[in-house]
Length: 313
Image (cartoon, rainbow, N blue to C red; front, side, top):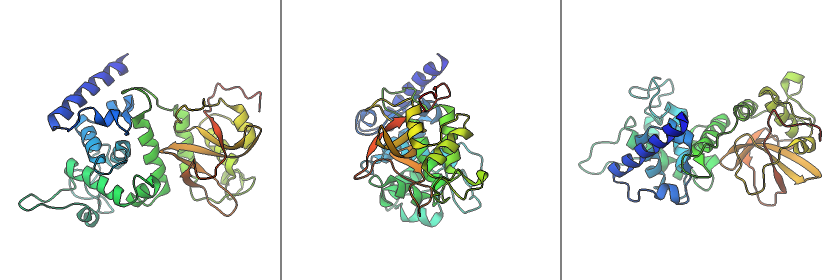
């Protein structure tokens, strides 16, 4: 009850902040094509930052504000971090401000109108709008993976940002609670740590003497690390369930399957933003890629839980 009350109060605070900021259309960010804010977003993101994320995203048509917010969370906890470079100075890599821009990069995505003060990477408004511009120039919204990777050249970073963005989005009503189970996030965290390892047919990972994983070996290991045992093969994992009803939005941690219900040949771990971590095929490495692609034979998804019976496996 306390969480629900806090979410409502945060929502009211946000609406007042939007009005004070002179947002052109008070509710359009929540009723248009962008995501509505989840209870997690309303409780975690300061209202002034949330206003900036929503407004700045509109400068790049199709860019969801949750991606900007996720970057702000990962980089500086929305300006609340006490790490070097967030409020003054720079971190060990030379990055500055709440969105952690390198000075040279910040200069390329900002401009100074005549008679105006120079933009500052420490100013949340300037930094967040600059981040939106940078993402847009780097491929957003068409290729959000490429855009986030350009922001920080690391696959684990892309996964962390997309998962956080999914936590901030509500597929239902404003302020709805749709967070994945803690085990799902633990599974994603494990899979992030395997990015770049080679695909190995029958592989179950370095801890078992293998150089890498095959697709179901990766998902099994990820959920084992989260305390949820899964059967070994993709088919058995699909049979284990429980199935996500068709048409229901996916959540981070869902397993996505390919083939037919009686002949599953591939599985990946959904991380949000239409992306999954998977071990795709011989000659490839564990990577992030879209879970839907031209010509795929997507069969559905499951949402593993500790309570699920494995009798059908």
